[in-house]
Structures are given as C-alpha cells and as structure tokens.
Length: 559
Image (cartoon, rainbow, N blue to C red; front, top):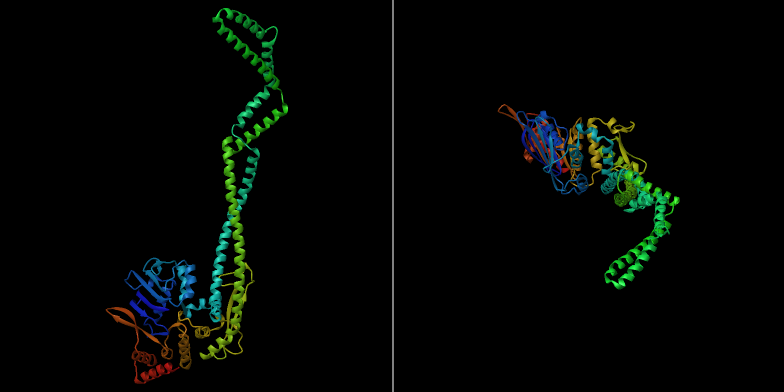
C-alpha cells in the first residue's frame, strides 16, 4: 500500500508531502493545478523515463520518494529474492533527477538499476489511464488479469520458482557442456599420452644401461677376440706364465726353508700366481659369454629408439617423463570429475524441466477454467458502469507442453476481447475500446478479480473521460467497491466520483513573489463539501451547489 509521496522541486511542486490511506483516495483540483503532475511524480518514483526539464526552474535537481507498506504483501517475497534484495516490510522508492545528467534510482537507500526498478514497481502499484494503455493491453497484462481472476497466486509463484531453477540449471548445464566439450577433447589426448607412456614403462637409468649394452653388442667380435687373445697369451706353451711362476715358487720355497727372509717374496709370488689363475679363468668365461646376438641387438636398438623418441616428443628426460605420467593421470581424474558433473547437471535439468512442465500444465488448466468464467463476471461489472450489452471474453493460448516452451509464466499467453455494443464482433480490447470505455473495462476487470488482500495499489487517471451524471456515480460506486480489496487512488474531475472518497486530497496552485507553487492538502468533511461544490458550479460556489455536494456525499456514503 502506498503510504506517502514526497516531491521536491518538480516543476511547480516545490516541497510537497502527500499522505495516502487505505480505501479510496480521490485527488481533485482546478484545471492546471497539478493533478497530472502528481500522477507523473508517482510514475517517476516507479522508474519511468524522466525528463530533466521537469526540474523546477533554478534548482539543481528534483527528487521524488514513494513509501510503501508491504506488511500484507508476502506474495512479493519471491520477487525480492529473485532480485537479490533483502525482504523488508517498508519500501522507499526514491528518484533523483538532476537538471543535467542521468537520473538515479534507489530502493531503501540502495542504488538500483532502472530495469530492476521497472520489474519490481508494477508489483507495488498499477497505473490505469491513457498513458498506461500499451502495457495494460499487452498479452502479459492480459495473462496477469486472468491470473488475478483465477487467484493463481500460489500456482504462479511455484511456476516462477520452478522456472528460476530450470533457467539456473540450463545456464549451469550449458557451462558444464562447454567445459565438457573441452574435457572430452583433452581426455582423448590424455588417454593417448597416458597409454603411450604407460606402455613404454620407462625406468630411471634404463637408457644408460641400454646404451652400454648396445655398445657391447655392436663390438662383441672385437671384445671376444681380445679376451681370447689375452687368455691364450697367458696359457699357451709359448708364453707359459703360469708354469714359469709355479717353477719359481717351488725354488723360492726351497730357499725360504733355509733363509726366512725369502718367505715374504715367496708368499707374494703365490698370491700373484693365484690372481693370474683367476684372471685366466675370468677371461675365458668372459670370452665365452661375449657372443654376437643380432636379435638382442635389434631389441636394444628398438627400445633405445623408443625412449629417445619419447624424450624428443615431450622435451623431457626419462625421470621427468615418469613424473609427467603421474601428472597426466591426475589431470585425467580431474577431467573425469568435470564430465561426471556435466552428466549430473543434465540429469538434474531433465528432472526439473519435467517438474516445470507439470507445474505449467496445472497452472494452464486453472487459467482456462477461470477464463471461461471471466467473461460473464466482467460483463456483469460492465453493466454496473453503464456498459450494459457490452461483451467480454478472455482467451488463453497454450504453447506445446514441452521444456523448450517454458517461461516464468508457464506455457500460456492470453488476450482480452471486447465488444461495446450488441451485434458487434468481439475484437482485441486494444482495437475496440475507446479511452472512456477502456478505463471502465479496466475498473470492471479489477472488480471482477477482487479477492481481498488489501496490499495492492491501483491508480486511476482520467477514468472519468467521456462520462458524467449517472454513469459517473456508477463508476464512483465501483471504485468504492474495489477499494475494499485494494488501495485505490483516483484523479477525477467529477464530483459524482469524488463523493465516494474515503480520503480526499485537493491539489492547490498558489502564486506568490513572482513564482507559482502547488500544494496538496487532505480535506475535512466540510472542506469536501466546498470542493465538490466548486466542481459542480465552478469558481462561484453557490448554496445550491453546496447542498448538491452534501447530497452527493451522503448518497455515496449510503451506497
């Protein structure tokens, strides 16, 4: 509910505070006093486009603030949550309009972007008037009208929640799919490299050992020949080193028996002879083992070639390649996690989309049932505002119940059809209704959809266009009826409408010191009689006009 509007330095509004109450708030005043400017101030607070020329002459900026009480609007919590705003039972929308430069908007002191303000403002207040015709006649507004009539608050809230989850999962799944595409491509590379390096089974020091083996295999003939020659030289009769050493040792032992000093040299010769014997046997053994093995040579060459190819490919030595393989395996495990997440999100999305489709179908069924009953209900209201014989229909169109068709409002669109006179074809409301008819149609829609709640605010501007007399009284009565379930603000030129006010505000323009300033004042019961008399008779207020005004007020109170 709108509690208060504060305006500073907006055109002819210098410093104005306008209080509002529950029920029917009527705004009246002489032509040119500033009634339209008051409506404009409300529009500015709600985030509509601002014109810098609206700033009061000589002032650096204008400011408009609207205070709302949301203590009875728990239905808005979801919207606040979606917008990332903390829920508060009092909301102040403030707009600052510099004489030069861009305007600034604030919600409870926090700067907000215009798109966010534009999304939230219609939830707080609805404007009904000539300037708001486009949005009132849109398919989105038509669907909202059907929802109001159907009382789909809980179902619509659930649909919005479902769609938010679907939209969030779609974003997450798309991001995961992008990551997954990269992961799958990288996984193919990793799987090849891991397989290649794993198959290689590299060992530190292996290359050096293989290089030594290959050198031996390539020179086996030379080595064997040298070993055999050395062995033969040591054991041949021509060079019988061992025989000579045995003879010498025997003679030294004979001498040592006589001369102890010879024991040491004899022992040394014995050791030398044994070493030569061992060496001869070893040379023979080595010569026997050194053989030309073409197959082994080929295997060693292939293994060395494979190792060196891997070193060139990866630019790493064998120990580094062993560590690199461990790194590749770790990365592969990480990518496997990303692919698992992608699969999980796809599964979650399918489940959530299926739930969204079911919620949308349930909501659609409720809307279709309501649309069928909406026509007669609105036509009944139209008759009460002197549009008897007018026809009205609400049509709901459903898209195919598939995930791709989901939106925050489900799978439906709606259109309102109207015919002012019997025999005329039902056509879209925007193409059929005149300005005066449109206001009454909107009033009838609101009354037909009235379900209590007390928190919504409706502002009717120019609702009295093209009407008067008995019709005006009926319009006033229906505005009064509507105010039982919603806060209503009505700007009017008609005393028959103003007579129904619970709270009457008068816009007054005063000229002083070469300037013009406008004020807004609540009217007492006696003041109301005077204002209605002015509206009846003009500048010269007669006793007859006062009596008529009193009668209108009393009659309105009795209805």
